[in-house]
Image (tube, rainbow, N blue to C red; front, side, top):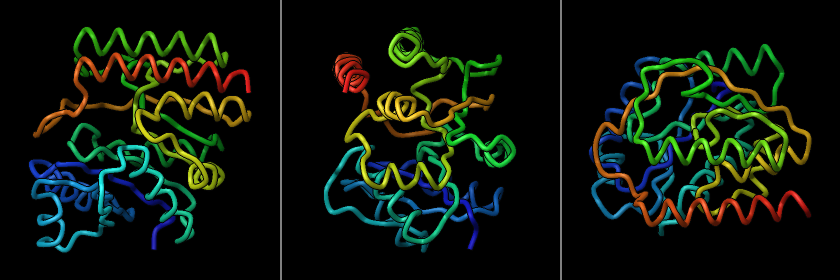
Length: 228
């Protein structure tokens, strides 16, 4: 067994899940688990037919519930580090070694793969970039930490954080909220450059209306967390 677990949350990712896991297995030595988050398409069938390692959630819990399931699995099986890898092919497995090497070398509690700490090939929409900039300043105001890519889910955490996330993890849109919580508890967070791609298939569940809800909810919860 590896000391690193890669957690792949998947909801209706039949177009991408096989290729994502296949490339992962071909390019890295770490263990993985797919969290099938109550998918209603062919995701579970693909996982079964290809004998992939997965946990099947009977209902859709959202990204937070899926990731917390993965962290509980990591804690139970004694992993030292856990990494989130998106099922849609956006995260490049070639950067996994960089994340692992950095957290081992630096002894930080979380290392985030950033699209913006250095120049990369990533080209996001204007609205997405505005949202990311908004959360950058929100974190700077609330927690006094500078995170250039606060919505990046491509992040590695150590066993201390695995324990934290096993106890509590936000239900939806957790990326920014957990940074506030970790900063409040004086955990150490840093970023390194990674390359990210556009979604390799399927459709994003984040609509403009959900984006507005996301920004409002995260702002409110983060402000509350900064006080209590």
